[in-house]
Image (tube, rainbow, N blue to C red; front, side, top):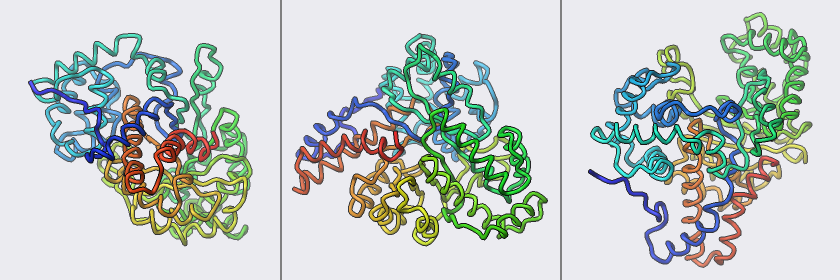
Length: 469
C-alpha cells in the first residue's frame, strides 16, 4: 500500500545553500500565530462548538477548490453534497470515495498540497488516497472527529489562530459574534466583515428586495438615495460595534467615481422602479462604491477590493446549486485609471486604507505595486483564489516586491470556507516566503538577519497594519 509522505522540506528550494537558509527562516515563523483577516468560515461553528458530522461535510463539500476539479472530471456536484444539506452516512461515504478515487486529478495543484497536509498532519493518515484506501481513510477521520480535540473550538486553538475574520451580509444581526464576545470560556478573536455587494449592484435581479430588507433592519427608509446611504452607514456602525475592521467589495471592476448629486438621486429612483438602463446601473454602482470609500475614510473600516470575477459562469449550475460552488472564472482587470477618481479623493486621507487584490497577474507589477509604492493608503493584497498556488505566489512576491517592497503587502490571506485547510494554507505561504527570501540572501541582496526580520513582519506585522488589527 502506497504511503502518504509529508516532506519536512516541502516547497523549500532544492539548492543546498538556499535550502539551509530557507529552513532557518521557516523555523522562525512556523509556529507563529495565524492571522486570518479575510475568510468565510461560519462564526456559528465556533459559537455552537458542535462536533463536525462527517469527513465529507468538513473537508470536501465546503471546499469549492476541491469540488470544482472533480466536477471538471465529470463528477456531479450533487454527488459531493454541494447544495444538498446534511448528507446521509451512505452519501457522505460515497462522496469521499469519489474524492479518493480521483486523487490523481489534483496532482500539481495547491488543492493536493492542502489536502495532503490535512490528511497527514492533522488526521495522521499514512496511506495515499485511492479506491482501495478510501474507506480506511474515511473511518479514521470519522473516528477522530468524535473526539473532543477535534471540535471547532479545540481546532481553533490547535491551529494557533489569533484572529479569524468572517464575511457577513450587512443585514446580519451578528448574534453569533456577539455570543462569542460575551462567552467567558472563549478567548479567541472572531471578527465580522461588512460585505455589501448585493446592495450595491442596483441593476441585478432582486436588488429592490435587498434595499427594502436594509430598510427593515436599519430602521431607515431606503426609498431614496440619501436614506439608502444613511442605512448603510448605520449598518457599518453595527459591524464596527461587533469588532469589524474591514469592508469587502467584489464587483466586475474597481472603478469608484462620484456622480453629481442630482444624477445619482435620479438613477437611484429609476433603479427603485426597475427601469434603470445597464450603463446607468454600472455608473450608480460605482458611485455607491465611492460612497463606501468615503465611509471607510470616516469610520476607519479598511476597504478591500476583490474585483474581476465572472460569478456563476454556468447558469444551470447556479440555478441548481447556488453561488460559490466553483463556477466562477477570472476576468482581466485594470486599476490605474479605474482607481484614479477614488484615490484623488481619498488616496492621501489618513483615515482611508485600501487593500487591492487581483486575479489578473499582469496588473501586479504594472499597476497594483506602483500604486502601493506611492499612495500611503494602498496595500497589495495576497495572492488570491486562483493565484494562491506555489508558482503563482512566488510570481506575485517577485512582481510586487521590486516596486512596493515587502512592507506594503498585506500578509497571507487564506480566503477559505474549508476550516481545516487554514493551517496548511498559511504554512504554504510561510514556506514560499522563506524560499523567496533565501534567494535574496544567497544573492547577497539581504543579510540573513534582515531576511529573518522580514519574514516575521510578513507573517505578523503586515496583516496587523494592513487591516488595522
